[in-house]
Length: 272
Image 1 (cartoon, rainbow, N blue to C red):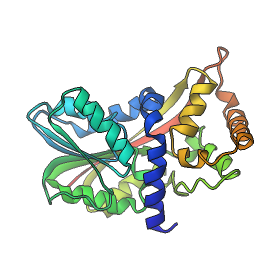
Image 2: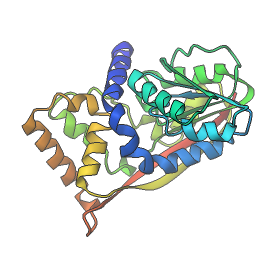
Image 3: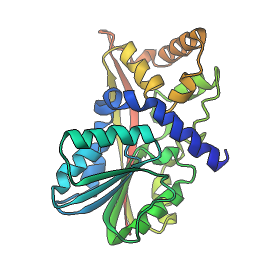
């Protein structure tokens, strides 16, 4: 897909999901966020750049770790996502955080202006992930860390059929290489191609827990990567997508009607 189109799709797709994403995904994604923050080793007083901040799930936790003497610049391609993050930052009185809508592949920051750069589950949507990693490396001082988390291998993410199910109804236009960075050593290789050194990775298996089918469908369809496509569903198409997706994860349904869906995350850290 042409890069310019991909950026546009991601911008407006995540605008569509912004009002739902935080509540729908906070607990399910927490293990990935925990790994990223642990590997980033954020300390009081650090200057941190966040790429693809979404609705601020990591932003708020990172801001607490760097404290009032640190600074955090949180960016995302989605203006609606940035607006949610900015509102949360203001409501909590976090004066060490600023936000901006910007493309991950062209960051409006000076060279070596940060001690660390982080990106939680955003690189899968970037048209050229290596370019985004190179921008993060450029923004970090020599010896600083660049840390990123992506979804793992498709075969280890039992929810993955959502893409083909949606595409059978309308073209979701989500990056067809969504799981490519989750392949063995793929994220490490991308970091090294971006000029980062001493790259280490951590792969973790998780269970995405949903209380019931309704909350799971809202998260996967309206609060995730196919949210823009979902806005084009007819009533009948929506019903077919929901039925097909529930069939695809039927083996993950527990006796009480809740779901535990296998997933995988990969987190890698490189040195600028």
